[in-house]
Length: 125
Image (cartoon, rainbow, N blue to C red):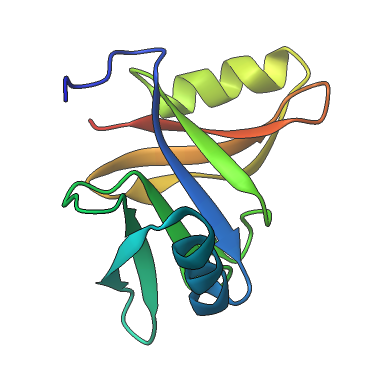
């Protein structure tokens, strides 16, 4: 799979209070397998299409570093500069709900746009 480019949707997570239950729901409904990801005191999950080893989504507990992330499917859009994009979002009527902060070797933040839709920005650098 080619590396995503700036402006592309590069990941999606579902953050919920009871990740293992929801993991099992999606495993049953759409056939996803999973790989546990240690978060220290608990595990989040990378979800795998049937027969695949490359994850297509994450299912995360709404606690620890994700305590402020809303319970919903969250799309991550790749940007060059998370902090700069967050400031531009604020200037255009958006609201930063979480971050910017470190995640997975990069930076991310969660934004609510002026219409109320929520998404994340991510930068690998």
